[in-house]
Each structure stands twice: as structure tokens, then as C-alpha cells.
Image (tube, rainbow, N blue to C red):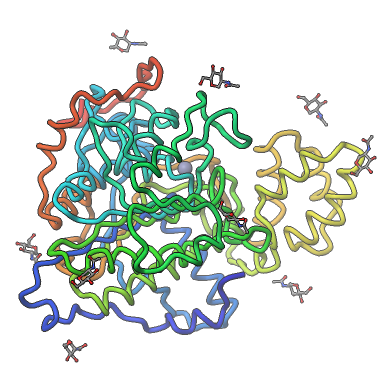
Length: 493
Ligand SMILES: *[C@@H]1O[C@H](CO)[C@@H](O)[C@H](O)[C@H]1NC(C)=O
Ligand SMILES: *[C@@H]1O[C@H](CO)[C@@H](O)[C@H](O)[C@H]1NC(C)=O
Ligand SMILES: *[C@@H]1O[C@H](CO)[C@@H](O)[C@H](O)[C@H]1NC(C)=O
Ligand SMILES: *[C@@H]1O[C@H](CO)[C@@H](O)[C@H](O)[C@H]1NC(C)=O
Ligand SMILES: *[C@@H]1O[C@H](CO)[C@@H](O)[C@H](O)[C@H]1NC(C)=O
Ligand SMILES: *[C@@H]1O[C@H](CO)[C@@H](O)[C@H](O)[C@H]1NC(C)=O
Ligand SMILES: *[C@@H]1O[C@H](CO)[C@@H](O)[C@H](O)[C@H]1NC(C)=O
Ligand SMILES: *[C@@H]1O[C@H](CO)[C@@H](O)[C@H](O)[C@H]1NC(C)=O
Ligand SMILES: *[C@@H]1O[C@H](CO)[C@@H](O)[C@H](O)[C@H]1NC(C)=O
Ligand SMILES: [Zn+2]
């Protein structure tokens, strides 16, 4: 584990220090740090906070680092659905425009929309994306790619790598997972449809491409941009699974990215713009895995703490943190019972994702022993489970059945409930700190946040939209499906 209960003590009473005005005076340089906690709703914050409070026996008024900088809430719907996915959700942060579910950096008529990251790059800012998902996943790609559907992973990867001339190269640094769409299909581990290898072309264009933690640790603040660090073929591991993987954590990637971007903009009148995503808070919601969810949230808090300290030392920096949507429909309290016992998750040592992979890969004969002696007592950390609990897990014959059975094994005792393996339409919290963020407050539309960033950076998206209008957004033919419930949203339909 890369975090400890002791470390949380430092968060207690941490306050949002005002920027040091005397440092800022006369300095026009600006940095922007957009933080996205994917799939993180109010109940998730309450659950993680309660787990830490009960673990550390902290008082009822104890605050997490993000509790201290909460400024408002955001509505999350997309142009065509009350329940959004990450693509149109995050696109509101990069373009200020709602679009249809699954769209990447385009409007509802498939027209590519210039993003504030592309505009910032053209204006001389250095740019970065640091995520725990694959780098071509929805949230990072809406900042630098344009595609009719988020599943067009090969096309999106080429755009992110700066290999599509109409768009150009807009990202200077990318850390995360997702190497599989950057390597041709004749290489083991590839998930591309074709045999195109992006790495040699990127190298030729000046990229430094690294793939493992040894190389990551060797990176220096003075390492030259552009840099890609894709440490896994697909998503990065959950923080609960770090002991089984040698990869940098979100905190480590963030610290390194800030060091490099700060150094790279040292002599510049422009600063940097980075998007940092706690991507897998969402994934743990999708598998109703509260133990992994809590640890992803704490990793995100610790990342916010790093950014918050950075702002104290660099007051020309603004940070906004929010979520694209809630995930899992998590609720605290169930079955008409009045208590919350999150300590049930303390002894969980592996994500349900890895545990289910292991279970479903085992032959039927081996499964009984695996469930009773390993998965339930060791991975889920549940001692003296009833035969009924073990039997429910053993009966699972698909990943989602397995998730639901493992989730139920602990959530009944914790007295929490998940209503879905998907997203929900509730509002999410907004947090902000630093340079000039006083305008980020109240109950906002997700588009307000993107528009605020664009204004803060002092960039104009229209010329970018014009310059990229001929970009191909189709990796293959695609028409967006008609949705059953379309409430017209002015300016989008
Ligand atoms: C603000 O920055 C100035 C100049 O670096 C320094 O002298 C001063 O102590 C700082 N004030 C605070 C409150 O950090
Ligand atoms: C690999 O890519 C080539 C084209 O580059 C294609 O012809 C071939 O069918 C692909 N193979 C697989 C297994 O997808
Ligand atoms: C890390 O990657 C480099 C370059 O591909 C390789 O030479 C090295 O052996 C790798 N190290 C580890 C520990 O995998
Ligand atoms: C900044 O300027 C100094 C002094 O001219 C130079 O040594 C350094 O390489 C420059 N750094 C960058 C990132 O351009
Ligand atoms: C976790 O496991 C330890 C060791 O078996 C046990 O003492 C403790 O009560 C367990 N914690 C919870 C919350 O179940
Ligand atoms: C099932 O898996 C166990 C454990 O890996 C192995 O010992 C056993 O031989 C396997 N049985 C069959 C029928 O494949
Ligand atoms: C699991 O599903 C497979 C394929 O769908 C089927 O052949 C098998 O009988 C199922 N096993 C159980 C225990 O339901
Ligand atoms: C702060 O924001 C206001 C309103 O958006 C703007 O007028 C002002 O120029 C900004 N100041 C700085 C230092 O960015
Ligand atoms: C979608 O809806 C429009 C307008 O109602 C209709 O003209 C079109 O045929 C529909 N397309 C599909 C694929 O159902
Ligand atoms: Zn999701």
C-alpha cells in the first residue's frame, strides 16, 4: 500500500491557503490543473471519509483534503441523455459544449470542436494528461482528439500522439496506461485493428517514449518534452492492486509531471495546462467494489494534496476538480437499517476485478477451494463467511455476476447499497483552489467549468475549430443511435 492512515493526519485542518499576492503581482504567467475524479459522487466521498474516520478514530468534524476546498456542485447530463458517459461529460470541460453520449471532441453533427487544450498549446502553453485509465480512454481523449465514437481507439491514439496533420501535436506529456493501441497487431499485446506501430513515428517526431517504472524513476525535471509514459497495455492497476504490479502511482505520475512541466515553462511567459484523472474511481463503481473504490478515492485525495501544495508554492496556478458523473448509484444505509460500517473493507487485499479474473479462469473443480480458502477470507478479507455467501460467489458464471456476488458479500455488513453497474444522473461536487478561482462556485452546468477554464487560459476555441474542420472523425462508418428520451437542450440539438 502506498498510503497509510498516519498520512491522513496531515490532512486534518489543511486549509485552502490564499495565493501569495506579492509573488503573483506583475506575473501574467498562468498554470491550469484540471482534475477529474471519474465516477465520484457525494456518497463516495462520504464513504471514503467515514472509512478513514473510523480507521483513525477521527472526530466527526474531520475533513478530507477535498472537503476543505469544496465550492459547489455540477449537473452532469449530456446533449442526448440525462445519464452521461465520460466522453460528453469530460468534453464539457474541454470545449464547454454538450454533445451526445460516446462522442469525442465533436458536436452532435460530427463536427470536430477545438478544445481548450489544443488552443492553449497553440498559444504556447505546455500541456499534459495524467490518468489511471488507458490514455485513449474517453476523459483524456476529449482534450486532444476528435472521433464519432469513443470506441474508435486506433484513430484516437493517432490523434493523441500528434500524428494527424489536420490537428497537429497538442499534448506534450502523457502518463497512464494504454500501450495496446500504440503497437501494431503483429506485436504481442496489441489491441489495434491494423499493424501500424505509432512509437517509431513518435520517436522520429521527437517523443521520448517510456514503458516501465525503472524508466519513469529515471526521468528528471529537465527531461525534454514531448514524453509519453504508458506503463500498461490497458488501464493502470487499482491502487489496492499496486502490490502485484510495478507501476508509478497517480501521486508519483502527478509529482513528476508537475516537475517536468514547471521546468519546461520556466523561461516562458506562458505556463502549463494539465488534466489529471482519478480514472478508476469510476471503474470500481462499475464493479460495485467499495474496497477498491475507497482506495482510489484516497489516492485521488493524496494527489489533490500534492497539487494543493504545488499551488501554495506557485500561486500563478489554478486547480478545479470535479467529476463527469456518479457511478454505481452508491447509497449509505439499506434495508431499513441505521448504521454504516465501512471498516468491513479494511481487510480487502485485492480488487474484485483481479479476484473475478482468477475465479473465472480456474476450472470448475478448483473453484470451490479457491472461493472458500482464498478469495473470500484473503482477497475480500471476510472471515467466517456463511456457506451461502461462498455459494453465491461460486455460482457466478460471468464477470458481472461475479462482481455482484463479491460486492454483496461485503456490502450487507457495511450496510451500503449499489443500485447499478453503470452511471447515474445525480449532481457531483466541484472543488477549486488557487489563482482566480473565486468564479467557480454554486450549482453549475458541466459546461460552465469548461468555459471557465477557456476564459482563465485566455484562449479562443473558434479558430481551432475552424482549423481542424476537415479532420476525419470516423475510424469506421458510424451513426449515433436515436435515444429514447431526448429532452432538447438549447444550442446542442
Ligand atoms: C510571499 O512571497 C514573498 C516573496 O517570495 C515572501 O517574502 C513572503 O514570505 C510570502 N508570504 C507568504 C504568506 O507566503
Ligand atoms: C493486422 O493488421 C493488418 C493490416 O495492417 C490486417 O490486414 C490484419 O487483418 C490484422 N490482423 C488482425 C489479427 O487483426
Ligand atoms: C524498461 O524498459 C526498457 C526499455 O524498453 C528496458 O530496456 C528495460 O529492461 C525495462 N526494465 C524493466 C525492469 O522491465
Ligand atoms: C531557461 O533559461 C536558462 C538560461 O538561459 C537555460 O539555461 C535553460 O536551459 C532554459 N530552460 C528551458 C526549459 O528552456
Ligand atoms: C482485519 O483482520 C484482523 C486480523 O485478522 C482482525 O483483527 C480485524 O478485526 C479485521 N478487521 C476488520 C474490520 O474486520
Ligand atoms: C483444475 O485446476 C487445478 C488447479 O489448477 C488442477 O490441479 C486440476 O488438475 C485441474 N483439473 C482439471 C480437470 O483440469
Ligand atoms: C457457465 O457458462 C457456460 C457458457 O455460457 C456454460 O457452458 C456453463 O455450463 C455455465 N456454468 C454454470 C455453472 O452455470
Ligand atoms: C480573474 O478573472 C476575472 C474574471 O474572469 C478576470 O477579469 C481577471 O482578469 C482574472 N485575473 C487574472 C489574474 O487572471
Ligand atoms: C432517428 O430519428 C429520426 C427522427 O425521429 C428518424 O428520422 C430516423 O429515421 C431515426 N433513425 C433511426 C436509425 O432509427
Ligand atoms: Zn464509467
